[in-house]
View 1 (cartoon, rainbow, N blue to C red):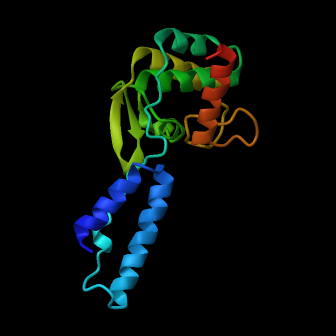
View 2 (tube, rainbow, N blue to C red):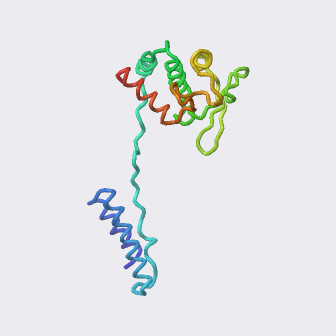
View 3 (cartoon, rainbow, N blue to C red):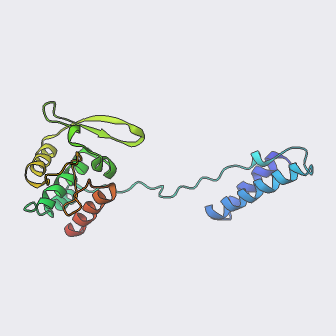
Length: 186
């Protein structure tokens, strides 16, 4: 058996099976080929000839919201409450700056530079980026900090609206998005 024949076998099986089944096949085939080489049945290990199987979970790009859908989500927020001011600031940051939920949740008071009109965003892998503090984001953030954020020792910008008054998590930010989307019918 040659390396080419092993690869051809896997490629042929790919046409007849789903990705999960082919992954199971290649795992077993690699183990079997290593066993054969270890027992001396084959002159060399052919496990390296087994190609990898590509299949991505969630390999789709989520659809973004249209301008009217974003407007509907923002309009669905009740800004007469403290939680509503927070939720609007969170949603405006997500929509206008394109931040991830975890990036919004990680935002600290010291990350907002009002004089320079910038915001420091801490992203994946310890990466830090400075983004412009656009007017509508600044206005929503200022309204929340002035009239909505409870007076707590936490340096997190966004805190829970009910006790315990601790920093919002990425899941908490995602919950704000989900609730606002449901209220808006989006």
